[in-house]
Amino acid sequence: MLYSRPALAVPTAAQLEINVSLLNLKVNDYATRRQIRLSVQVAREDERDLLGVKDSLLMITAADGSSIELAPEDWKFTPRRFKTAHAVISFTAMEDSSSTSEGNVPQGFLMADGPYRLDLLVLGEHASGEVSFADRLKVMLLQDEEPVDNYILHSGTKLHIFTEPRTIGPVYYKRQDLTNFAFSMAAMDEAMQGGDFHYIPETPSYLLQVRIGRAEGGRTELLDPSRYIDGYKPHMIRSDQTTTPISFASDEFLTGDVVVLDFERKDVLEPDTVFRGDAHGLTSEVVHHERLIYALHTDLESSADLMIDSLELE
Image (tube, rainbow, N blue to C red; front, side, top):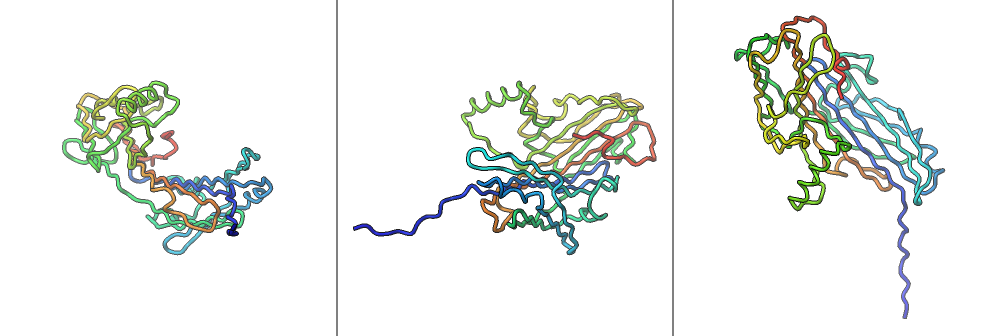
């Protein structure tokens, strides 16, 4: 005898993928840039269902109850392929204390730690989550056992750079570039020798880089990373860990030299743990970047505030 069974719902290709990038950047402790960026990918079986993505809306609400609404700054449409069509939309909220004209939020809105509630409305579906900024990195600069004053170095005097935390890892001295053939081959070789063929997300991970240039401008040169990256290997751009301080001898920088320290921490939160909502196929990832930049001028007094964009940061 045959028994009837309830029909199972046919799964759809509808999806809402949210990728959030938080940036907390400080330059010389007084210029601060805070940024929340969302890249949102929407998938539908029928291309016509994506026509309304340009009307999507992001609301950001601060802990004090104040809020802003943002329309997409950009959107791209990909026609139907393999049964689905895609649209990618992006939102950015940014505030820069050194250049208020660069931002698109009320002054002071992003300067609190949070939490900030993100409410995203796409094609009539809703997703929400909370994100926060954090200050977890510190740098101490010493000459003659005294803190460096006003970011001015004195030539002929030893310089010691301490980070907090003191021991960091995994640590990079260059940003990862997947087009770097030598780096890719070395990474594959290590993976095969270790018997681990799976990508393992590194979180947190760090970047520590020291460059030296001239006050009048021009190209800065990367200081030999073997000086401050323990276990440095050519082409690998990565070490399991390193420990500061970084020390300069008294004759390593001259009048007019600029020493630039770039120190960054990157945290990747567990996938699908931040956003909730009624959106079909909802998935999400949040990446938090905290970055400190110090530009130290040698024997050159300057009363002008340093602008973040003048450093031509990556």
